[in-house]
Image (cartoon, rainbow, N blue to C red; front, side, top):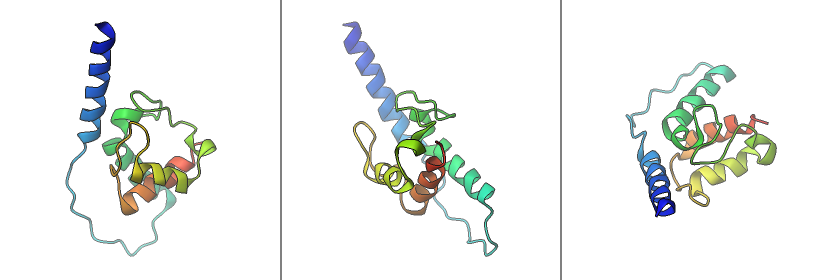
Length: 112
């Protein structure tokens, strides 16, 4: 009985966490100035916090989803982006798309 209750709780947490972060989808106007890498990192961290941290933790430490503190040592940016866009195992597909998925995958690839 306890195993079923724990499985129900973990499944619910995964589903509810994956559904979160549906904030404003309006795009800001393009900035013609060259973006500094720190600004790119900040944007990627914000996207991660909004769409990924509920499962992977605010500090990439894992939780319902795996630890990502050293994901760049295992996967390159393209491999990470593929997982973000297409999903893998319990991770649903499409939580981030396009430039957002690329920004987060590039940022995560630096974590080695």
